Length: 350
Image 1 (cartoon, rainbow, N blue to C red):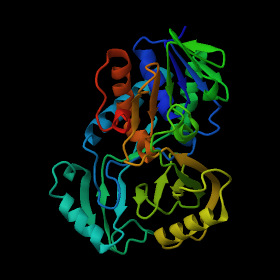
Image 2 (cartoon, one colour):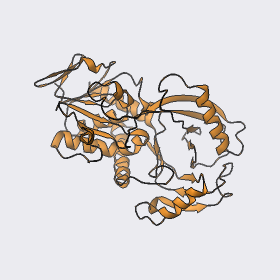
Image 3 (cartoon, rainbow, N blue to C red):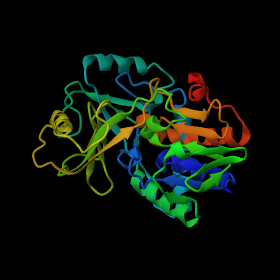
């Protein structure tokens, strides 16, 4: 009997499964074939400084260290080229007020190392609109999430640790010695369902705030340099010469195909970012739902009344950066009883 059933093979479920297996646990992952995984759509953007004020989470340095070591170890074990692409980011100021935020952060030792040289309104990369200028940001890039998830799925499948099934947690049975679900038995169950957590009868009491986003793949941008551009929207140069562009945000309409309104939002955003978008074509588009939370902190921990049920979720738009570190902390909790970081422990809402 496996030690852990993990529900969901998005990035959270995949990295937690890999971490537990490396620590000697038997794991079985149940997944619906990525039908609802936001990780499949996400850009995998690595950006230590969030929001309009360029703030960093207090654990950002730890996140970065764990991220690089984890993805490098995965590439070695799975026999894959590097999953992480480190690319400097040109961060564009969106207003004079943001310039003041930048100046304040230059005096903040927790952030200053990630703030590079400032540039003026006419000094951005050729073809980029930057009326307020910007600055060069380091420790940025992106993770090739679809390739990573495919490689991990194949690796899990070879170990008989992956099964495709549409999970219905209403059928979960909890017994004195474990859990039973869809013919599978294990000592414990960990839910890593992304925004589908809202339909989970065991954890639907937590304040999830799903955030739908649309991302496009663009061609015809060969004139730009190879920086990530981040203003009101972001533009990521890919290794194959294309670009990913995004993203939108919506909290009401979470499902369904990409709408004309979402396309128009991105169309206007691209025209606001580029001086001359003529010749740029959209070759792909997709929508996903980020599992964001009300307090912007992730959800880790154990059900308050069912000690065999656990949760690993709520990483929002920063999962590619933060999940590797959190997977280690979750494994510490499950296997050794070491306390979870207080800001992530779901006991804060119990």
